[in-house]
Length: 305
Image (cartoon, rainbow, N blue to C red; front, side, top):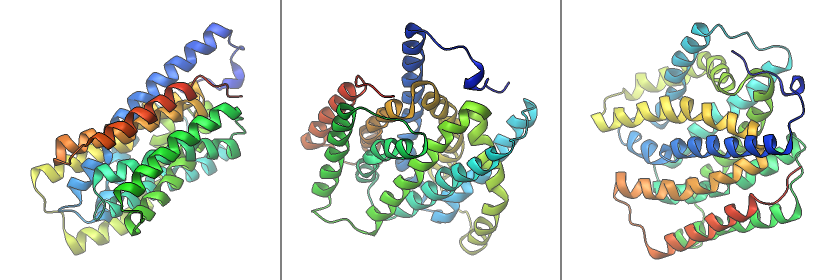
């Protein structure tokens, strides 16, 4: 069933509001935990597969599953402006972020890329402020800037004070994801949380099939079991299942507040990179982790209208 539009629901009490925010934060964390493996898995996949196949081909596989779910559950078709919103979501999280991040993973270590993506929560708040008219308090902005600034400083320290093409691609992917997340949260209130990503994938698949098909014809898809496993992960979990929890969490808890949980993704990605790719974790990394987690814990207590 499609989620009931928020405007049709009675106004929640204070306890109900806190309960929704708590559930939203929990769902957001589940989504973040799934997304935290995206860069390590992508880095494994691009060893054998072309970035176009990894970045866009994953959406085609996810779209086939999404279409099956939509048909089996008899979901209604999007209406009116919902189609336009779906295009925005698709451009952000189906096309922009996956393709740019896959290209960047050819030259940027997954752990380092995870740090660059640490500014995504701040970018999402900015997108929400513009697109959804959320109004974070001054204190909320202060702690968001502290957390976001910390991961930028960490990135610069790790990169020797420079930002290369791979880092620029990751920064561009951040902008794409932030816009897609904010628009997806708005659309969730009328279309439903998991329905948003499913429809965004379905409408994207015909367009993406052309470049993916050309890339496969040129480079093929011969890869190791690890490569195929990584590709299946980014297709089914990063591109689909993770958004089931993430979109609903943003809608329930508020984009500005729940998006701050994504600061944890940086360090979950670093730990995953160490386990899966053997990348080293030092005391500086752990120190920045403590600082960013503290900024999230304090920032989420600040009011957001």
